[in-house]
Length: 160
Image (cartoon, rainbow, N blue to C red):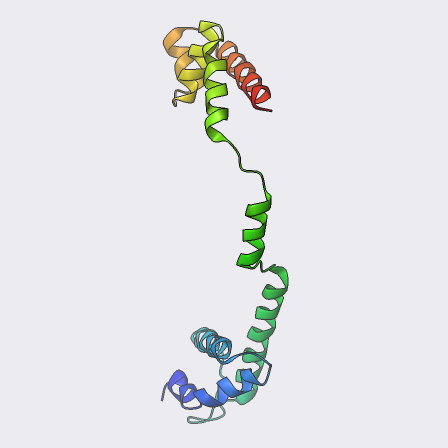
């Protein structure tokens, strides 16, 4: 008989063992399912977890369940849970950003730039690469790069 089939006969017992670790029924169910996967991998890798043809070594099963439980607790300790009420309070307290105003400011500032700076910025911003633009226009790569960087810095300072 297959090991997983033998293990599954005691499914309720495995869930009760995990629940004794002070977890809820759903979490216990999840840990037991993970145990089936882990035991299956162990058996496929050659680990013998059977006493004989019909009895499973319960020590392996218990150790696997307990290890999975500890792994879950370690993961939970690294995660900070934030409630929806906390998020709602933060949204109410934070000032909303006026994106339309920022967009208008950037557009008018871009329009006031020298035509060369504006055109370089627009071309690179639309997806043109520095190298491609340099080859097409015969303008130095570094000149294009520095112009783009200068305009970008200027626009960032504008919205501060």
